[in-house]
Length: 633
Image (cartoon, rainbow, N blue to C red; front, side, top):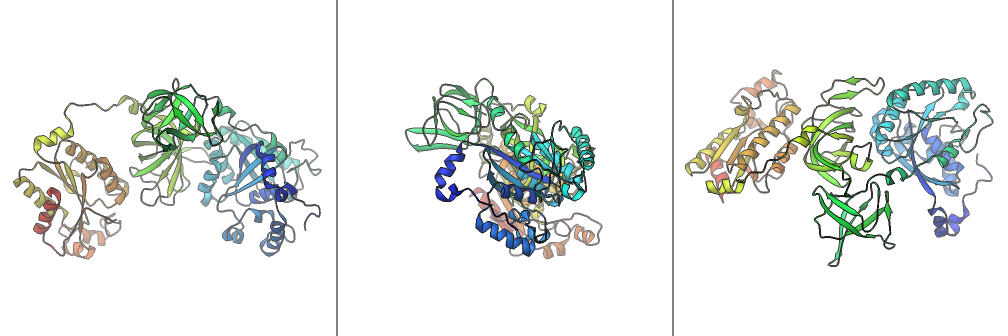
């Protein structure tokens, strides 16, 4: 089975430092393999590792044993087993997770990501593609261009991968037929031109047999090259394009080891910098100059895109993690409303209006998404009407952040234009996105400063503003207790206002239904109104089911710390249903009322409310007294 002359680089075992020094000056190419299921991605990478002598004796012995036990190539070596490490991958013969492998040749170092072909794991493909310079799109010569071929090509182009290799694999199974290769290349070119891929390199290969991998094969005399490795070694990559752009450094860490040193650390996302260069700190806009460029190996005279450095500045300016140090004469924008392309990566569908964490470079903000302007059909490239995005859905959306972020269009700067969305409750990454531009309304609408502030309004009323947020099931007693609380506050000459869930749906929110998205928008609007009322110095009382924790936390984040007081009216479902003063539970049980909380829509109880009221253990009057004592005490 094995090549008797298969010998790895002896220098690795003899002197690892010398080996690393030998390869230190080589350029690095990051690339991915992608395509449909069974197109041979893992086999190709295994072949590249094997042919570049990157498999050691123990690995080779294990590979031979595994090939006999679980391989798919009979008595031959199954190169895919070098990459498919998960038990589930070996059992099913598919790639599930992204597998990264390193190998090197005489001319270049490589990090290759083997990405899944199955549609279910498209999100993993996006992860692997996010750092790649080149994509190898594999096509099974027997099957031609498939749906996943189109999907992965579209995603690779969308993410900004400029170098595409069309590897028509398994040519050994079609007798190395040139006509088949030409037909597939022509079909792919027609699709590629539609999505904006104007240039790609087509290579007929056999990952299993090794044809046109490291050298041109005698089986394809009609193909004049280049072989795959030759192309990977010579394709132009690197940060030369980024170096020509204006300087950008997202601040990752303020380095303050002692009183005499204060530096700002991060990876340069664009341009170059030298001591004495003028820079601007964003979003504040303060200007200064660079004093030193500090690294572990000493100060530098110049630093360029891709390097991680610490900058010291000539002036004591306010700069912290999330800020961006930029060229003073060419700063990026800062905005809080954008159009973006979104790739949805979660099993649960996108919920318009829900707040997610948005991470862009070193910035983390809260963001909400509007319903998609349209969803993109990757097969036909049609723009489809959509209210949400499902798993692997790709759409164009508008989103807003709770404060301005420093950004550039993704096409101009991947670091300052690419972002991820994170679910606030689970901390799971639910989407990846690319910013197009800021919305004009974000540039034209500015906050108007007023001379009378919230503290002055509150002092006039001789009270501290607060938002008492009552939450609980329908029938729990929220409105009853909230009404008693306001009556007691009124008798105490306190200035208050009660926002009731039913009442606001007669006016402010009369256009909203009871779907999950509408419930979220209902709470967002009420939160904004409550914030304005608290700015007026009022004690605001709200009585809403508000079933989702993340929306209650969204409202909490709108107010100064300590002003949001969550009051959980804790009534068991059975007790609330027994009361059923409005007859709603009866209708919901009969199927006449859809999306009813507690029946066919979930209620997420507060985990640590400021006040918890057990209505089975105290009367509404006792509950109101307790809330007043906590509020004013």
